[in-house]
Image (cartoon, rainbow, N blue to C red; front, side):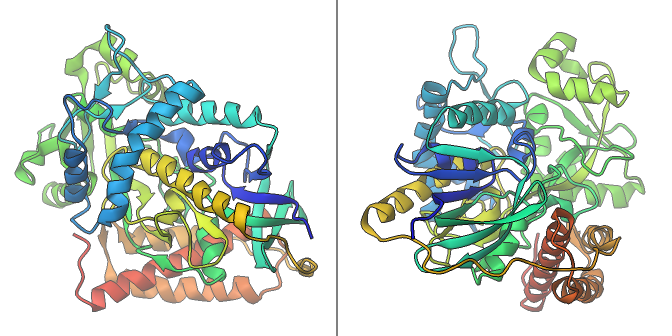
Length: 494
């Protein structure tokens, strides 16, 4: 039986789109976007992409060393060397082949910025909306390829192995259908919506990780979660916008409730320490001062520089009533990124045959226990491309095709109970935020497990809300189990 497509890709962020574009023109690629193509964590990435493209003033070994330091030397060195050595060519391809525009100086050389944890200026950026620039250019390129089809509002609900491929259950505009494919690449992003407050998009509910786990794929280091130290401290929004690492890289000072600098009391690198260090320092300073009020001050750089370098941040803060050219920016740590996920090898291959993963939902090991700023877009590019190497090789040499009918369609009859997702977010926010609360983790695991059990056995109608609720409950239980297992082994998170 000839499959509906050769490769099914779930996700239209940088990893999913770049993977699609790296296949040969004869390979039939179907890309699913859970919502519209403008909703992804890639679209929200501000700072830039880290790569050693200036070999006069930078060196691969320095980038590796910086990443190891930020990652607590828990990084997978082989994957890290691949990332740093191959990444620059992928970044240059964005410019040459996809038309991505990075900021340039007055001599037309690419303008590099500095971010926390980096020893050199190696961050290529497009103002403060680098992820949007890259994603939109990749999307335009993908839409121009006749072998690539993109379906919006198409949510991957299930994957069932069948012979040389999968039956993928997909909700398209709420209607369930089955699609057969020879290979599947999960590029479904992070798990931010498991938290009450996150910088992640509305699509980041851990769906791909949940599907892989249910199929028996190995999940690794799922509890290694990065909390960005400087999210805008909005009073009402669950999705908090990021005040990019690059703001501190361009000289912004981090201040406590008294308007005093304090980072030098916790780390000699001050404001440019890695994200986990700055986040923990803020929490310790909050305990010392009895206040959760913290601020970034970049006013010394002048209004023209600020508006030109950070137009998106300037505009968003203005919408919140803060003029960053003359006022402090209120900030506080917030869930931002997942270092763990679906465990993959150097070609993005999971422990389930024909199932691959790339981007934030995957665990390549390159980040160790804490991601170095602007390495995420680089990882998405490099390992998405490497997925296509292995799949293309197998398509040339192996037979493919499902060998039986699709499973019976889901026939649930009960509506989803209200409040499950809110409960999960409350559990995670209390149990594992910057510094874990182990008592809350134990209590939360019991409740999350009860919710997950009900969702699996409650005969609920298959809807997008149901899929996300089950994903969030699964992610919560996996994270808290690992947090407690590490505690029992005497492993610390900081």
